[in-house]
Amino acid sequence: MATSSRTSVGEWQEHLHRAGLRVTPGRLATLAHLEAHPHSTVAEILAGLAAAFPTLSAQSIHNITHDLAAGGLIRRVDLPESGSARYETRVHDNHHHIQCVVCGRIEDVDCAVGHAPCLTPSQTHGMRVLEAQVTFRGVCSGCEGALADAAAADRTPPADPASPADPASRMSAADPGDRPRVPTLRTKG
Image 1 (cartoon, rainbow, N blue to C red):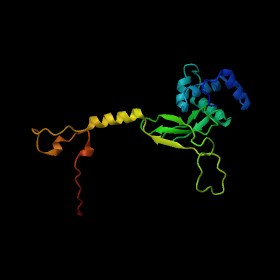
Image 2 (cartoon, helix red, strand yellow; image 1 turned 120 degrees about the horizontal axis):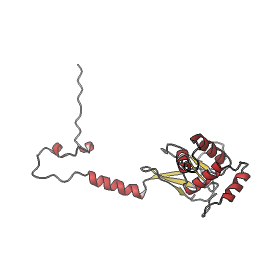
Image 3 (cartoon, rainbow, N blue to C red; image 1 turned 135 degrees about the vertical axis):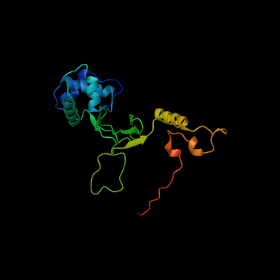
């Protein structure tokens, strides 16, 4: 349901009816939460709804997301190293995702071709391809800046001519990777 404005409760009720699902407060709240917070996990949905629905359990959210995904109202997204399945209301438009490998931030990426399957495999092994799910992985600008700052802070300052001549004594204790490697000799005995 890719839209530029928020979907009204009445529209979600209509979508639920068309999918053959009962309209429940938990389903409506989950849809509204996912529209406002795409790529949420079950734990994040539960945390977001806990104040308004204190009796809602993680199992309830699992059941709700399962039903909504089966009804085509949400999409389950399984990304590498994401830890848990994520859900979104943007369905039926063949978009992809980009994921920061440092902080885990996930954003939508529109399909370059505009229609499924977006990619053509070199070999289909007799199968008709329905879709291709692409996950771009990279480092977001916020993490890139933080990594550059951390690298700059970890650099050892130039040696002070008045300091001891032993280079190992000038090495930072926080950065053992800069220390010279000494091979270990094993003897038979």
